[in-house]
Length: 157
Image (cartoon, rainbow, N blue to C red):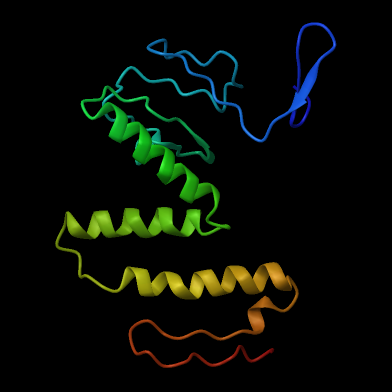
């Protein structure tokens, strides 16, 4: 491999956007670097995989169909769709990751509930403004989640 180009025996090569390796029941990933290789004995609920799919310390890497499954085709299919959304989320994936996690923690405790989805909206705008102009993205103001009022622009804007 060199970038997106895979080289084969002989002299042929081909450019790929993604590589999918089906290991069947052999859960060894010797082709991956150590920092990307999933190491787990528990295949029903893997702690290192967010939603059973995205590698926690590198959420751009997805492991699909890893769990012991009773809903085999639906599970694999829905994981693929979930990964597709993560890939095409244009940077929203990390925010959504924390949004979902926070909502899960709140739902399982008596922590005071609040509009977590609404709290994510300013982050999406902030991220967009940051990508448009790294020097001026802090000059924008956003709507407050609790009161619904607009925050004041920063005093240096």
